[in-house]
Amino acid sequence: MKGVTKRYPGVVALDGVSFEAFAGEVHALVGGNGAGKSTLMAVASGAITPDEGTIEINGERLARISPVAARDQGLAIAFQHPALLPDLTVAENLALSVPESKRPTFGRLQDWARQKLEPMGMPISPTARVGSLSLAEKQAIEICGALACDPDVVIFDEPTEAFMIDETQRLFEQIRKLAGARRRGHLHQPPPARRHGARRPFHGAA
Image 1 (cartoon, rainbow, N blue to C red):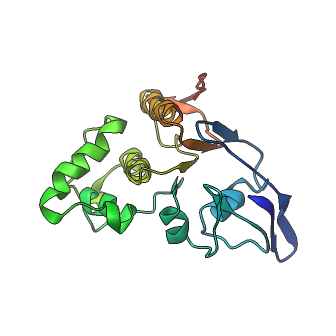
Image 2: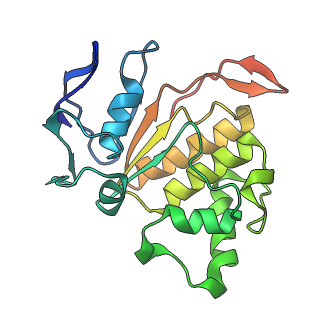
């Protein structure tokens, strides 16, 4: 991202921000409320059109600003608030989260979904309706959907908010694997993890 500026009535959310990540790197963007973190990540993912500035993925400028265009060019994002369809099954949501070229046939859908759910190590049935799941399970599906895109760049927007420490550890393991495979990773303001419903700081490195 180069020279990204985004203005709203009465406030400049981003003022000439530039950010560059190379393959195999993991970055954490931290800051106070209102610092512009979510806005910058939304710009990167194509969800928000900047007033000024450009976005490049794999050296190619994102000519059309949209989430689909960014995904097709190699960027995936797991949102803090899962963007899932509650009336559809887990498998159906996962299939919709990836580009059409990566979607399995109907006959392979369940087995494909089980494979994509494995990284988070949670016993989630591919046939379950998303609306019946817990927030942590929905967040895991959101993350697995992003990883299923096999992205060159992946953004996690406060991904551990709903997780306990064991689930956070599994996510960090996946981030290490992505870095080892020379993907670009980005963590947006990871908050403390929880165990047994209590807040507990997580001391570790992705």
